[in-house]
Length: 147
Image 1 (cartoon, one colour):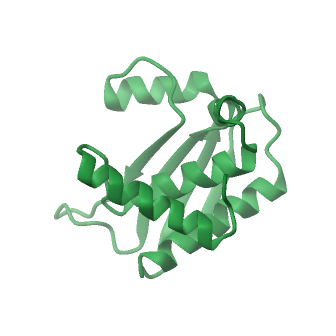
Image 2 (cartoon, rainbow, N blue to C red):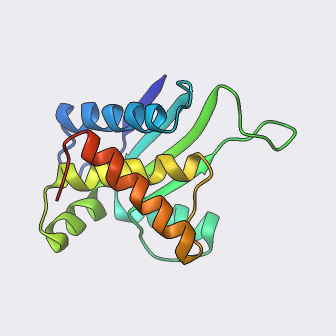
């Protein structure tokens, strides 16, 4: 189950964006050969994501997306719920303009990026970063979402 909540009013969150997020989540699960799992997505603004970033990452600044994987009592990934994604639609809109592509393309990228984080991928070193970014681009390419 995919649950999406829009908790901001700075950028118009459309039905098309909702459908796009769901599509990218489903494609990422399919690409990684993971059975469908629950994912919660919160659409927020810069102010709220900055609070979360400070609280959970000790970085007092807004960011574009945060990922919160869920674990069971033994520390393994939860078997039913993959985790939570928080996207600052305000920051995504700023980045889309900076990078010269559509807001939908930015939302799709951030969703794929966050989904891979929920599945254990990271970009702490060059090798991990290369692998993760190649997977993101391939997922988006399979959906016909290119720069």
